[in-house]
Image (cartoon, rainbow, N blue to C red; front, side, top):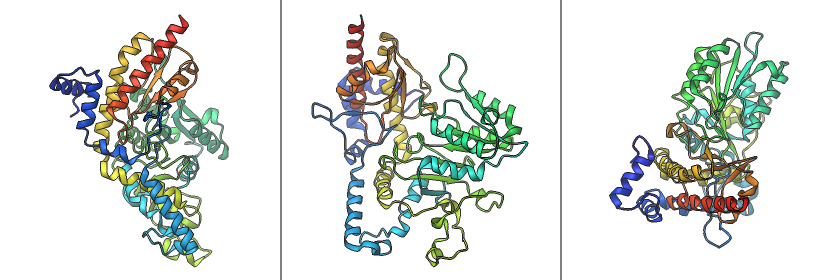
Length: 448
């Protein structure tokens, strides 16, 4: 259905239908044709002040509640109430707690394009990043630098700085922080490759996001990894905004390691359990140290309580404590929906939804002097558009929320809109554009 640009496909459909692509009728017809539309019923949609469904374009910050998760959590409470500790090994729903992560590891591996042995579901995002950097950031007098983007999510920057300091180096000299060219908002791929080539002999680790949290830029993970490896550097990625958003092929791309949270596009709930990837080429590398804990012990002898650590095979060795059962089944509830959809179909719908939103906002961009800073090329973005307003965001954001558009603000003047294909519709996108137009029109009239 997608051609070179999503809007081309949409306009072709509109012409076939004999309606204006900007009309509500077109959005409704697109929803009627959407094979993934029934998945919306799998999620709890927040209500607006008028009692109707809100337009929830905030999956890039917190995904919606899968109704299956409610059911699964209720079942776990039931098992806990009826069985107590017995539920660790005997579970009326076939999910014994001692192996609860097995319910989600394979499904998570499918999402990120990995072998199940390369994935562990554990901990939280930044803690996992630290654990992985223990293995993959091994600075020497020659190689001690970390290449990252200057505008990385703050938690990543904090982690990098603290790891550098922990090893006795100075972040002001050990961090190679890239920023966009003057007057631009996103990094050019050729500039990333040039920096790797220039500094590569001193770089121990290249650490990038999959999708940039602020701009929504999708980085070329494969290209960055290949460039890093050519210079002898490890390549790791924070996939918080990429997992469940864009198709990934971590194993095929030879990525060394990655980590992600699961409460954004993976809809597992606020602060829920996260995940890691370690490429199988590193499983038997004795040069990679790691911090260990009980749950990383080989599972068949874990309860023998030996003082001698026997590592679990694969990425599971990085686990430290038993995973939260409630968090894990919340993730399971979402991943079961992903299985029905498939990442390729979700990506196809995502391209159309985001392209439609971009098209509808074009007139507003000119009228209200707004700027879309997310890359225009569909291949360089996920399901997010970041918009800079010509005013303080606090002057319009509350009105957007009151009108039923739940989106995200980044001060001083940015709103982020994330049309998520699992539960958002073309009608949602149309309503979002209408709300933004009304609010910005009112704000302009008030300031005139």
